[in-house]
Image (tube, rainbow, N blue to C red):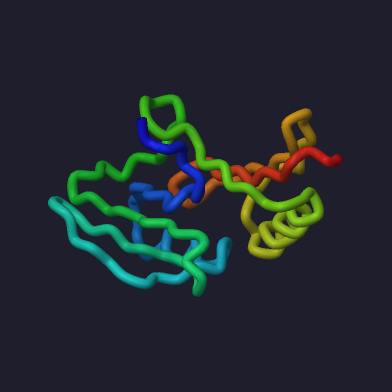
Length: 134
């Protein structure tokens, strides 16, 4: 049996309807920029990351895409959850999203941690989680 994963998540790859709009949105929200692209059968993937390559998002466009909005009610991706170090950092993200005009939930405190929810231009739900307070 292989060893369990220890290094963490490498990247998130999402299919989007408008590459330019999504590149701009992910760039503004997460401070990542387009670094490279890779053609694939029936489309293209564009890789966005920060200078340290600590967050990598690959946005895919498929020629056969029907441009429908994302729905977690279909089989496949439900949402993407990303970790932040503390509730204070989560509050900073809440301010950042508000400054950008990105619609988001209030921070919800749960026994497993605190969460802030928002959606990208294709309606893909993104969640930021902070560990529970000690």
